[in-house]
Image 1 (cartoon, helix red, strand yellow):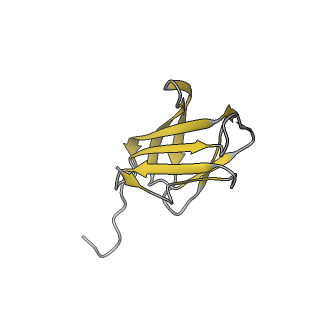
Image 2: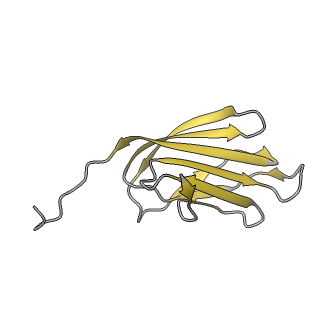
Length: 112
């Protein structure tokens, strides 16, 4: 996994964020936190850019690794930015994304 600045972007500019992703973006880990301890966050979104396919998103509490919620997500492709509403949190939050089913690749006419 390598740092990736475009796979996920948190809408709140006051939050610090980092993302790691495989080259295919089939496994992604995003971490976001407040600049000061004890900061409460609510009403924040995350923009996702993922290849076509079905994904499983797990929202995690980094302090103990507890899964706060799981969601299924369908991406229409890298050109389609999806918005994910994040739950309210204090201090920090992590999101793990795993592709569960890649979409069928379409053949470009004239490339067979």
